[in-house]
Image (cartoon, rainbow, N blue to C red; front, side, top):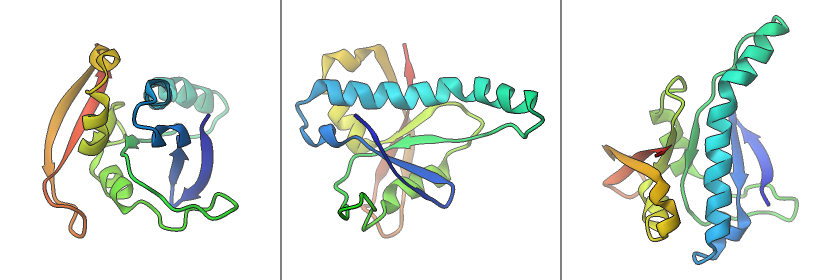
Length: 141
């Protein structure tokens, strides 16, 4: 199950609560498939918008793994600055999933994720976050 939590300045934050269990393979598969499906559907969504004389849409999909604090109404109490900063580093026209090194380290532990290719895009400094933060593009093999 995935919950749409809130929209933050053109950013939709999705939470996959079952990924709290680092051994729950299915929850991570669900997360990856959701992210990749969002990317794969972007062109179709843009075409549908154009057919209705609306502007095409462009969006980015990034993922990271961190603890968040939620209020009782699912409002994020402390928004993820890491996710937003990774988001700002990506180009919306690339149609690739960008993930942080924390989630990549979790995924590669499962042999089921060998059908994905993880390409290191380099090391970024996120100022107030941990130094030496690697980001990866993800695609199906």
